[in-house]
Length: 340
Image (cartoon, rainbow, N blue to C red; front, side, top):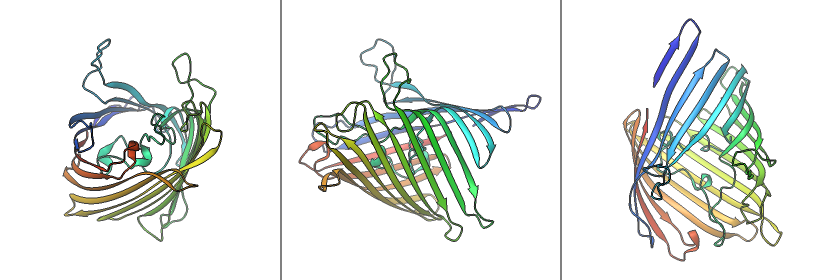
């Protein structure tokens, strides 16, 4: 981390980031094995004073080149976050700009893979292909542009806390001008409780709604809703996480159905540096008829080479019907995750 200060003006600038490079191999038909520079994020924070800060997050992902007019250039360079925050108190902060949607345990951190054990985040945070004739889609927006209110309340002197976040912004609409301006408003909210009587435990709930231009079920500008609940317990050796999400959307025939995703992950750390973990996820396109689309079972190890460098290995067992294939397949992944 690079820090620059000016005592005369009481300003401070911090520069830091993270990176991830993967190797993957699969026995799935038509799969490609090899290395992938998954992402590099460069984050700058500028503290104007004790109450005002500005954050920018520039991300390069998914390729090795972003040369203009080159058909072989597949990399993406984007602004993941850019916001201004004013802190009234620890109980109330106001942000404006482009932000990550406050939803669940992983959405705020899942690009920063050095901050969690597995190579990939849970399926709940991925693009999912629920119908063979439709493109993959997330069940809630990863980003939004607007205003967010957030804070933390200390509920007692023993350490109980309540965290909240409420965001209002532009939804996943389409603007003919190519910018983020649209009339499809989004509303997101998250609340999390940490009781002092059960150290290391927290429970949270999330909500998101907007009009999705693509539509999970193929209906353009569909008004969609996502509801989530999450649990986590952790101490110096063990971490247990579980989440469930229900997403309400409309399909082509006009009926509204609800998709569901849930997972549980258990991790245990040996010798302070070696963590083994298991994760089971299941995705259902329609909860009403228990039509399981696919599931994934992960076994993995995370080795902390240093406080800022992590080597991860993982085997993913994908059960039938993912991508609407009748065959099961497995994926082996190795990842180096770096925080700098």
